[in-house]
Image 1 (cartoon, helix red, strand yellow):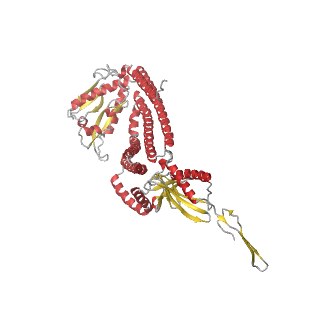
Image 2 (cartoon, helix red, strand yellow):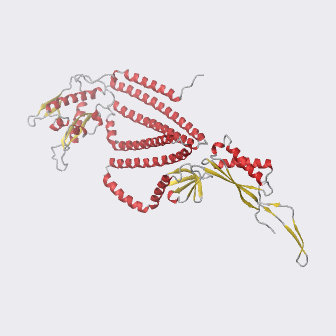
Image 3 (tube, one colour):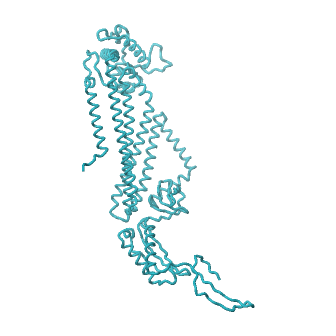
Length: 593
């Protein structure tokens, strides 16, 4: 029978096929293979990304890289959304700035306006002439386009690029401006726009195919997580508690990995469409300017979103690392069967507490970094938070007591997740525990939340081992020695049973007749069992003992009452006294005379 490939493998094949197809479509067009030729070549087609790394850097980064002092600022000069070069200006107080000295932003804005005005003249390679001349008075190069003044190259402009020679910088700028003006005209031709439209269609197709495949991968991961959850529900009923708890931690780790993979796929899907839309804007000269608007306008929201994603994924990864750490520690404790079950409970409890502590630390650091991005001074804020925290701590002493008592409960191993405890008037299965609260699930399914400071006296019914304490009433007319023998035989047979023997840790201890009253004789029996198995063992033992007593003709002890009949004569004296030979059985505990 042919084996059916897994959905993951099948969709991986489809993904690779789609990627190869997209690459063939892109590489079939020469615009994806041509490089920029010499400066004399009019304009070579280029990728639809930003023209250079200058588009991705803030305006003051090149000045810092060039060793410029902080009293100089720079601004980018753009045409059609592409950054051509940077201009510089000294830092001067706007109130003290003379009217004839422009700031870097003002210089860049004026140059951009002149460039756009010149570009609209439909220049060609034959009619375009970009030159520069030295001004006699200032000895600074002045750049002209077809004889029209564009701007003056200053010493700060050259120093911004790490140059001391103004003429070299002027030659470089003339080449850049000439290429930019020719590209401005060329990219508005119908042939270029049609070619970019085909590239945009191919990118949209690639985005749609890849997004569909990512959606299919997410569905496959969701199915695997559901199957794992069903498997965990079945395996948790295992008789071996340590193995069941370890399997639960392993399944939780696997579910965490699947959730992490699904989250990464969703994040990749969102980033795919956002990145694809950003690239599509750069394909056409009419929309390319929106890239800079998006980069500048979404700079702070993007940083905050990126910080939130980093904090979220650090929390998810830290939870996986904590689960993996405690699984490894539990693996090392499996050599000793009895202690390993208790250690498994402690590991499960400590893993939840450790994850909550790590999550709190990561969230705190992320919050401080977010405040830093918003412009707040973190140092004074931390100092003020310490004072406020002290004031809050004085007003929230119960919370501090909860945390301290929770820490002591964990340290002393009073109980853990998976134990059955009794606290005051409530009892239940410990479902969740952290440094502040303990949550119990009682037999009716109610979730009971107890602050750790309220846990003063606790009864742990499942720490290391449990015990069945049976009180067996036997009728007064029964053979007591035979009843004791049957009680022992049923207990010994159950201890040797293949299914139930693994739950009984020691041979049952028959204490003997514990009470003798009007209801009969009460026989006491102890059976030491594994944690949380005392109720199962007790139910099965009662069933077997009832069958054995019926076969031996031994009755269960019940309360009895005796009725005396007396006859009185006319003088009020007893004329006849008789004790009824019959015994009237009743559930009442009062004797009537």
